Length: 377
Image (cartoon, rainbow, N blue to C red):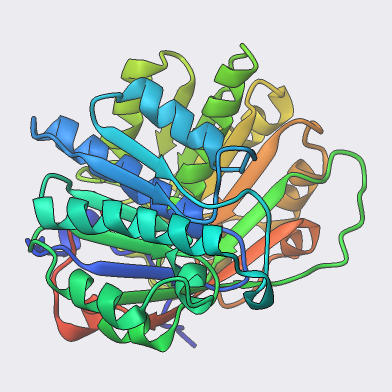
């Protein structure tokens, strides 16, 4: 029986929207800040392709300067590559705390960050404003949700607003155009030779490929900080044809960091449904896997992103066992990031030390709003 729900919407399938939207990424799973950075990278790539300037403000609450965070390396790579496009402001102290540990300093720092955000939104100078960890700031009562919601609703039309972090309050969700929850899954990982450093992003919600792009940025940034060349390979299945803004983003990165990013795409320029596979779909899937398998074995790449591998196996375009065996034999220092929705989880899910399922609670496409290059695809 044919199954709906497995297939990749291509860039050519949709008209483009002009209005910016309010995105909320929350949940206990990994990928929230990474997804925001992936959207930033896509937006910058689109701006370079279209010869228009895409300015971005990264406002990071609850992340004081005295501590290092996973996304710091990715942001450093962005700022070095595009210093005139990226502004960053960090506020708060550098340790975790609960509602019963809130201090006057925490409130003042939250207000300082919000003053920056409010001014940036009113100015209209930025294409994208990321408010990282805004959700827990609101959840802790450090800012008034009514005021924040009122300001966000008055944002300039084209501006994209992205709020991340655990515990998004209902008042923020109510005004959001998109709400994606990152839900963690845990596996009893057997640390056989080579395993570890395997992350999977799946589910119906937004944020899978963008989280993977954020991981690629992070690898490049870590290499820069260590005076090393951390190479990244991105292999994309089920994404043939032209018009994907990942291409522009990757080209932009290669302009700033020559020879660090390799990209291979395979598949037809069409949605592939179960029961409607064509011979070319199998040929293209196998071509992509030969490239990926060789790269995994080589140890030449710090991070290998296998974009849409999950639905490729779910559609039975590739056999599962060779993929599992290749992942088991990967070099210890190679990170593998796998994305895509699927109905039946391949066995390599049991090898993942990070597995985030993106749950779609709200999406503007359901209201008939067109998608937008650089943000949605």
